[in-house]
Length: 494
Image 1 (tube, rainbow, N blue to C red):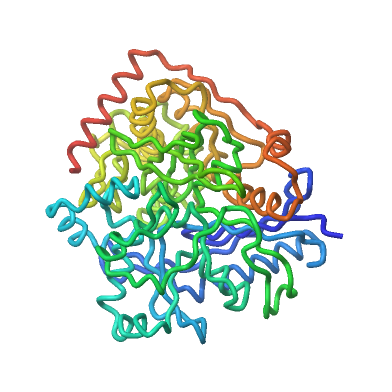
Image 2 (cartoon, one colour; image 1 turned 180 degrees about the horizontal axis):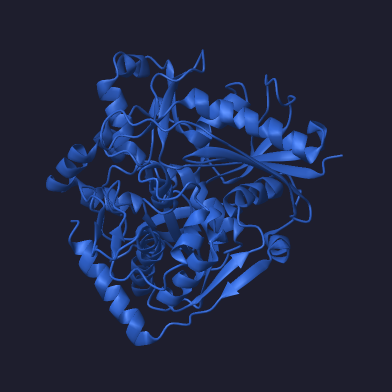
């Protein structure tokens, strides 16, 4: 009897596989990291075969840890680093080039040319996105233009294209399913978010043959079944797919318009559910598809994100050697009560919303002879929170109302100091759930609904539990001064 749901969370630095029981409890969780590839400054790639190996290893590890048989798995959900894209051979299933990661800035010049020609207005109108190297469209064009033989093979129909969700689905089903869901498709810059279809004007602009593209499906339902795998038997349905941030919104049970979540991962991503009607931002937020359930209309969200969040702590660890492990940053930062004027703007791969300055670069300022690594650690945590303040402020202006609370998830939310700083700077309650891996959980929920493991979103709301509530404890004057100092520092990196 099928008693569990498996979720594959394919992230930027590694793959996490979780297994949930029907009560929503975490039965097992296993993560495996893989190599980051930086061919040139500002370029970021992943080896798709290493990604696949990390998936296989994590699936095996989770099964072993849970001590269950594959026959007990009712369905599989997939969530993924969204804009990261690749092409592969339809017969051999092997990639023709590394996956180009969402962080990669190699197409900056092309995106700037689209802005100068005025094409960005059409892109914004059809996709809800700003014209930036972040999204998949310009990355696909780059591969087609720059990798020998790829364009010709694409025209012959020999190749398939997709974001990581599509690649994993293809591999899991032995090439039987070439599909994506509406949330991932909305991040390619090739889908019209009003129709839910690939857009001919956009395909022409980015010179992408429609024959390369997967079909666009609901986020919940049977996408295909496992086939030809050595680590899972044939016949397990893959029944839920969503991009990582939309999956986290679903996993936080933000099912109503006006509910919001922030995921603290490699970057930080804040999504606000706007319901069945897309809200086109006047403050450089993204309008994106959140999900579409069978028989229902598309559900939309406003989104703003910082490219560097948890990655800033990794940089303190790996780049500067200030800490030996990421979890040390909290205790180090807590040894001082403030950053003493030290400001870290972590624009290590440009600045995202609401600025969209791809050429911006990181800066640490305000250093004195009295500055220590503790002040830099504190400034790092404060920067992670301050970036989100800029995003939420813009969203609230678009919505015309203030949020009462913000649900948070991701590994960095275990940092109590960071969560309190976030509540203080936002001046709203911050709610941390009992299970912080809500990206994976959201994909599990979608898959569970897809196979009838759970009956409704109402049932899922009963499963979701709060672990800790952080309330603001900062004086308004101090908050205003802190935000003003941050904005001064941000302007200097433009």
